[in-house]
Length: 161
Image 1: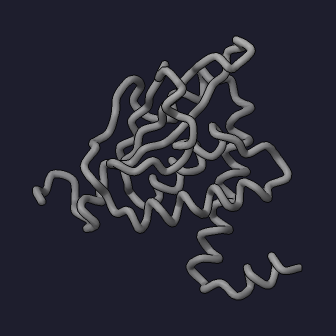
Image 2 (image 1 turned 60 degrees about the vertical axis):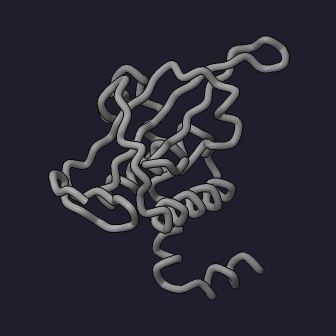
Image 3 (image 1 turned 90 degrees about the horizontal axis):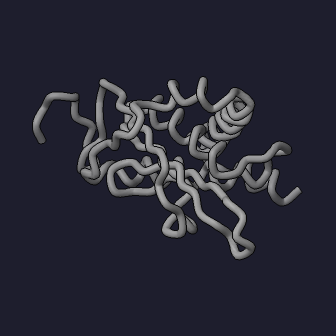
């Protein structure tokens, strides 16, 4: 009951962001059922990265916090790849470029494990925890072609800041 009261006490924009995160996590979980060979074409340009120019960290932090919070309350699995896909969709909606990274490593038992994370500018939106253990085996650059957040200000593509 306390969590419901906390949610009700939030401002409208925070509630909307949390609801948006929930919907995109559900959408991403459905997409995860598609064979990766088909899904990968929608993730961005393979083996490319977006700029590491610092972006609007307030927006990035809000999306990151929202996805990480809501993912704990979904009744479906919302692990790294689901979070990463949801974050990419939320960033695309806001016309923010990002890169999805896929990595592999071996756990303590020698079993192959995988991880996914998303970076926008210099900020890691999802999956930062433990990413240093993984070797990048794939990356997908998602450019919006619209506005990009640079140094906290929205600028149009092609304009110089």
